[in-house]
Length: 188
Image (cartoon, rainbow, N blue to C red; front, side):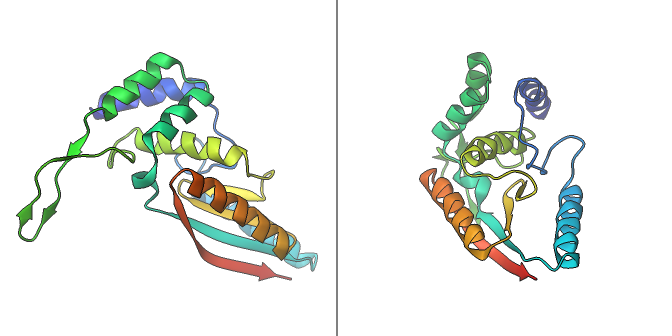
């Protein structure tokens, strides 16, 4: 299955363009690049004695909470041909799992929400969902950066950061996803 997932991912990457603010799981990009860019931005503001406020946001159980209908919608909106949407839908159709615990395991049950854990395709599918979701809330780089399921929002004013954070929260919650602020940094 992993080989087939890699083939599908390669074909999807040919047609889907992910925004430049996404650094997680993107070719020729790394989260280290984003951290470096953020550090340079912070130093530039500090050297100019200007305020820069940043909020670090974590998406709770991000892969587990992606609604499948949202995934299909985001794929179509990203320009993925219907046949490839159906290929991915087939991978998710009749997903079943068991839970192992100290006293044994549960009976099989359907999994109707979320991306497959351990799938080679899941990181890119998540990037597609985040790209479409962020389209309505993101600011020009470097004011918003995404590291797969983590987001950093920066602005020159605390009020603007809070406003952007609320827009992100609203967009995420509308899609059944939850976020939590990891850290808020305000520097002068």
